[in-house]
Image (cartoon, rainbow, N blue to C red; front, side, top):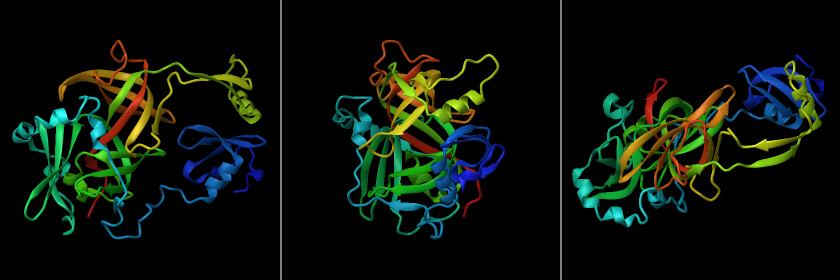
Length: 359
């Protein structure tokens, strides 16, 4: 795309950003009203680059491969995952839980999920690892134990906390990364215009349903390693002249003119970002709280299921249920509706329902 020919009213197809109508033409930046309802000021060079590039969501990276190679990839030999850190919101030392493990396993039940009720669209490949997951004390919240079945023995592979409730989201699946154990996996999927990776707590149950490029409803929940009231932060910013002109063009009657220098704060900001050097399903967050529901005795901890906005897509909010134990919460008072919270979380999810035909 040659942006030199654009004028107000021109139609543009900006690749991954979508199609829209030009509303502002500046020296370095173009204002676009996208067909989805959002408006954005875009650098000319970014607009040209996006228009040339193939949209990331148009074709999954392994779309030409047969299933399951199109969807599933295996961890390399150096991949490391640290499930032990997921116990920090509950205990000082995870070995405390191991003392009770024999009793927990004796009282546990088999985990069920979507495929337990609705079946599967295809048989598991013969070379897939067989396994199952136990949950304690029940299927609502507690401890999950993933095991691998071998010809002469069954091995307990991992233990992790789980919480069945969460926020429901429509995601487009991109990749399922299977860990070396064969019974654990992380799902990468498109969430609106972004990408998110979560630990699949029902992987062994539902894996035969997964196809890259297809939409699914997942239940997502973030287990907070730490959380607290958001700190007040402000920065002095100088806007580009094009941005000032674009903003002033959109002023409503009586609104004061926009100036080059302004104060930027995080009040009300919705942020969900990967944490450098942590696992791909670990995120930092800053989010305004929409609702707070107390929970009791999750592996000995009381706390709150907090629904908070972690991203925005035009006029729509991307809300996530964040599970905060009292041990992980740094505030004096509980989380409050309308207040901002921040912290770090481990994102887990489970299949709620496929949204297209499979098999």
